[in-house]
Structure formats: structure tokens, C-alpha cells
Image 1: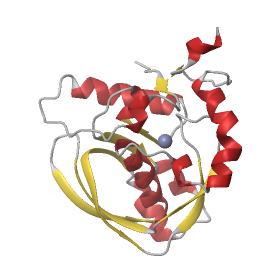
Image 2: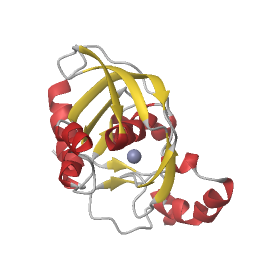
Image 3: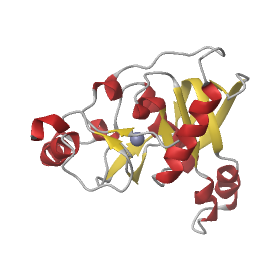
Length: 196
Ligand SMILES: [Zn+2]
């Protein structure tokens, strides 16, 4: 089932999300629905707050990047395995020189901006079977994970832009909150009513 994606401006996107336990109700169905929702919107990642749930859960599927011939062999190999569910994740280390990448977000349609993030991370998380992993990622994989991880910390990529850039985007962000935007997937807009 495709779930509506929560748009910029919804308070759920600003919450520090809470850990869940293995008895979280209908977790399998939720994961299935979130994957379906993510693929339907052509996203490479989706976090639970984006479907209205303030829980520490996100998923990524960055396997499509593995085809990118501009990346080196090691990067492409890492990306091939990058269809994963992260539960109760905690980034325990961030390393390396920050580098820039043009990011977008399913909750902020039509806006793409250059964002700096550290090159590599070490992350502790549970998979969908609640088995614990501690893994290190770099490059694009680390990039996508950090973007989704920010969602469970209540942070959006627009927060990382300069004050000037944020000011320039203000009107467009307000329009997104109000639903004054064309988007080809299902969304829920926090301030849609104020339009009428
Ligand atoms: Zn996002």
C-alpha cells in the first residue's frame, strides 16, 4: 500500500524519533508499505517520520547508483548491497573531509541543493530481524544513510544550507507546506487548509 509522504512543515519531521522494540505492531507490513511508497516516488531512501511515524526506522535502496560508471569499482560494489533497513540506528563516528552533493528529499519536492556531509560514517543499527550490526560506509552510501538518519533526528537537508540560501527558498518551502506544488506521488500537506 502506498502511504502519503508528509511534506515540509509537518511537525513530525522535526521530532527526534524514538527507538522501537521487536514487538512493534505490524512491522513487516509497515516495511513493505514504506518500500512500495519509496519506489513509487523514485526515492533512494525513506524514513518513518516521512510517513508520519516518529520512530527510528529508515530504509534505503541505493543499488541503482551501482550502475554509475563514473564511480570506482569499490564504490560500485558497496552500492550493490545497499538495499537495507535501519532500525534504532545511531551514527557513532563521522570521519573524513566534508564533500558536496546535490541532494533532494521526497518531503521537499522540486528543491535540490548542494549539501556538505562527512565522507564516512560508522553506524550501529538493527536490521529488520532485529539483529545488531556495526558497519562503516563511505561515499554515496554514507551520503544516503546520513540524509535518512537526519530524518530520525528531526533534521532536514535544508537546515544545512546557508542562511542566505534558506531565505531565498522560504517562499518555495511555504508553498510546499500549503500543497501549492505539482507532485506525482501521494503527499500530505500540513498547511493545505489555509489555502481555502
Ligand atoms: Zn529526505
